[in-house]
Image (cartoon, rainbow, N blue to C red; front, side, top):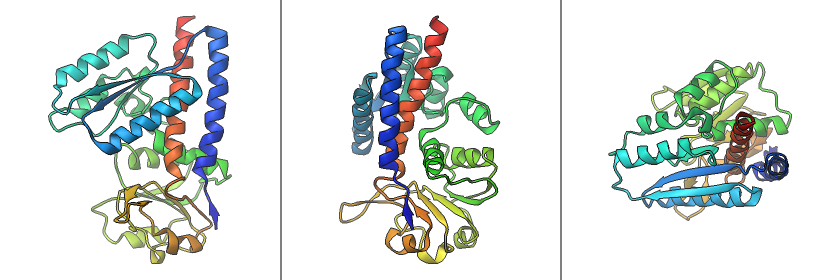
Length: 285
């Protein structure tokens, strides 16, 4: 069993982005800029945004966080996004989800300029992903593909079981695997007999937020496990969706939680923002 070390790869990607940023600044005098919208006081969202801010500082990005109260109006968020769309110094716009119930999330995500949609959530970029065209891809599934590639794991022809069908992880994960010629099954909350599907899989990718959902008897010998889940256990520890202690001895490769997919998500955000900045620099020439 080998650990898929996302932390080490994320560090490598971050170093590469830092070098690319220095080069971009030297050649064009432009600094990549990322703007984040954070609504309310959710501790998990605040922690994520803080991690993203620190990562931006490390690689030399300009970053700004628009912190808004929980009772913010739809108009106020829309006005802020419109302002950021028009700001030439902002290359990437990130709306931290979830948004409060009074906000129409779909409308907000659709308002972000697709050329600044570094989270890859705009329908334009979703469409380009599904049709295997270049665009911005959601950071977590993109990070998973980078991690598999780093360890020379070719998904072509492999049976892949994606557990979870969210717009942020499950659906784009399935699209990326399909684009790489994998055979893909997507399971979700209404799937009957999950074990039947996971047992047949060469690669299981799970991200649903249920502690120990994937157990030892659900995994065939030599399978590859990518645990995208992140949960806080009763003892305060961060754990994934896989029963790591019992499942890992059966695997050929497995991601740990923490230190697996999590760091890759932030590394891909940096990578996407750099890509947006380079495209923006070309337009300005």
